[in-house]
Image (cartoon, rainbow, N blue to C red; front, side):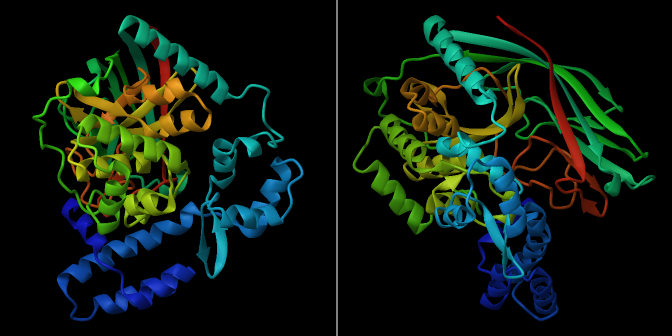
Length: 454
């Protein structure tokens, strides 16, 4: 199943592409089915089978018509004028597509406007005097100051994660396979302890498994809840990075392509060459790439990753993307430049908020694996927080519980169907023997029960 993802790189036949771009998805599916009945090359068949699943998932990401979007904007934005919506579209500030030839807007388009553009956030009629972002920035700045002063900062987190199946997706008496993520024990993670589960797990993935989960396999009963409770520590160290100390002999692992998204296209190679220039020092190469992404790529919520056929080209040409797309672009460009880079993702956990987040690692001898959070760095750049932006090149805050050390890696117990997110592991997955449940068909909640600093 995972080897099939490389076929996303195969071009979609032009006639089907035109219908898809117009948003006539039923017709596109009929055309694909008709093509699959013919004697066509196996590589094209694989592509079209994946495309059917993509087309099935796209509409759920765009629930709002133009009229819906205008109503929401008038209700939440001070002095909003209708023509501003078209300006947002022209400026690539909102995520939208055509469905039946009419624009439909992403489910988080409004949140995205307020999150990424301060001048619009000031017009938010529902904005509190001090929003969570301000408190979060203070927490980060305090943590960064502590790490830099003391050289280390360690947190222990006590977490509970639960998954419930949405009413419409409950199939009582049917076998169900459920995965809930737990921290990968490597890098900054130490002393993980699984405190309890409900029901009994089918398998707990090994400590360093690249997308680690507790797997449940059971007969589904109406109203059933899947739960795990655990403790885990995050250890953060600070090291002053000196380009003069970088060794001449650097490793070559994690510099290969991983189709369809970590790949060395002519555009990405040209972009990397333009950004890196004649620089030979690998630490400075990585810093140039980080500086480019944090200053040129605007944070943006996007539709589900599986529905974007080339994630790195999407972010590198549109110059917008969420934390995961920015991390992928950093990894891709570093590898093109000969700097080892890899994925890391999981939960961002603070006393105020628990949420999904993605970032990257890169390797520089003699320092070993370092961190790069382009999303947090980009936010710092836009907020003129230079010290915070510098810190997220090479280091992280301690508020991370990584559940994935590799992008696009299968679970220890495969579901046999295309996962809701076949690339990442933050909310887990649920599947019946004949299909995988999609966004909205299962609900995962991560809760911080307690924490301590030591």
